[in-house]
Every structure is written in C-alpha cells, then in structure tokens.
Length: 373
Image (cartoon, rainbow, N blue to C red; front, side, top):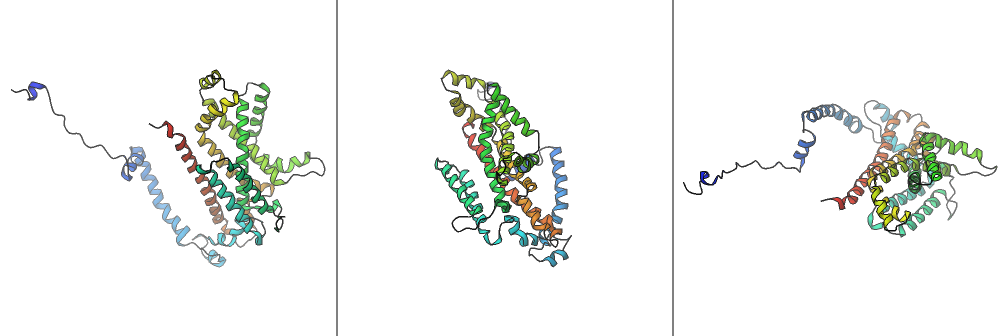
C-alpha cells in the first residue's frame, strides 16, 4: 500500500456541494419575500386572489369606462359604471388655486413652481452652501409679492382668497422650517439642569400634545383676537401658521429628545474633559448623532405636518382639500362625482409624501455610509 492511498494518509475526498443559490434578481427576491415559509406563501396566494378579483374591476372603472372630458352628460350616463375624471378637467383650476382671481392665477402658479424648485434645491447636496439661507429669504419675498400683490403693478389679493396647492405648500414649508429650531431648543430644554427651563419646556409639550390640532387652529383664529388690544388685528394666515408651527414643534421636540437620550453619556463626559462648552458639545458631538438616529421619525413628522394643513379649512382658508369642497359643492351638477376629485388630490398628497419618504431613505444611506463594512 503506497503513501497516497486513503488507508495510508487518512485522506478521504469530500463530496462536491451544490452551488449556492443566487441572492440577487427577481426569483431570489420572490423566494425570500413571497414564498419564504408556508405562512408567507399562503398570504401571497390569498392576496394574489384578491388582486385578481379586484384589479380588473378597478381598471375597468378607472380607465376603460372612464370619462376624461368635462362632459357632464357623458359622466351622468356612465355614473356607477365608470369614473368621471371630467370633474377634474372642469374644476382643476379651482382645486389647485382656490378662490384666487381667475385672471391672476399665473401668479400662484409661478410662486408655487419657485417654492417647489427651492425645496428641491435645499434637498440637493451641491446646494448646501451658506448662500442657501439668503436664497430662501429671496424666494419667500418673491412668493409673497406674487401672491399678495399691491406692488410692481400687481393687483392686491387678500390672504383670505389664497388657497389650493400654493397655500398647502406655503403652510407646510414655513411651519416645518420654523418648527425645527423651536423643537431643537425645546428638546434641549427638557434635558436641561435648570428646573425653570425644564419645567417650562415640559409644560409646553404636554399642553400642546394634550389637545388636537383643530382646537389649536380654532383658538388661533377665533380666540386669540379676543385678547388683542382694540384696533390691532393679525392676519388669519399668520395666526394659523403660528398655530401649526407650535403644534408641530411640540411633537418634533419629543422625537429629537429621543435621539438625544440615545447618545451615550460617556461621550458628553469625554467632551467635558476636553474643555468643550455645553453648546460646543451639543453642536459637534451630541446633535449630529442624535439627529442621524431619528431621521425616519423626523421625516414622518414632516409628512404629518404636510397632511395636517388640510385642517385649516375650518378657519375659512381653502387649501387643497378645502378648495376641492369649494369647487364641487358649489356646483350641484358635478357634486355626485366628488369622489374622483378626492382621488385627484390624494394623488397630489401621495406624490409629495412619497418624495419625502424616498429622500429620507437617501439621507439614511448617506449617514450610514461610514458605518458600512
């Protein structure tokens, strides 16, 4: 027996193993997410059966038998069988711009495009420069000049006639921008060692969170003017904007406070040993980590603020949802097709909220890039 035989060396060949399964592609994704276990397989077949039953009917109602032109007779003929998107084609200018004068609606259109472009620029890294703050100030000034008028030959349009999508974007953008620094200070105040500051911030948060937004808007619009000196009035748009901002700041402060509590205390103590001041520690060590950990919750609050602007219709400010009610309820002929109008504005809300959600995921990937291995 030579030295190469299994008996002499003890060597035994290992049987060939099957090649590993692919982990990328459509089939591996389906295997992992749709048919990973008998429970997920059962749920997949049940949901698939429901979709096969509902989807053809939905496509038939929403697309195949739908009326796309503003033809009231055709819509009534297809009522109950097909969607009437003609109500959107007929009323879209009122839905988008509210009660703004018809001949001047180019002004809110230009203002809205400018504001959305500024929001997109603010979310793009190459534009994160110091001049961005000045650009925001200039854009807001142009926005109010276009919307309000009274200068440069533009006719004046009072704020109570603003509405639709421009008002929704204005209220949500400004309230988010103003609520974030307030929430930051309140979150730091709730962790302060000074009892007076901590108590004040706690009372503010608990008081605001203890009431619904609709009551805050009601008090800002109807109760607050009762406490003002005679002859002094504040525009309803400003009062509503302040109410939404304070309400959003209270909820956002708790989100940020959760991130602050997640930062290890040892890092704060290490900063103190290096001689850093309180604000240097917060700015350079604590806040970057705390905010990075709560990005999803912060964006969730932003999305909530954007949708909560629909409540301002109770104070006679007709934003996107209120403008739809104004457009359809005023015309009895188109009122039966109000549902299609709601689908239209739901699509607008979805596009904005989905964009914020995707941007949140991008920010998370950027912040986690240094932690990947």
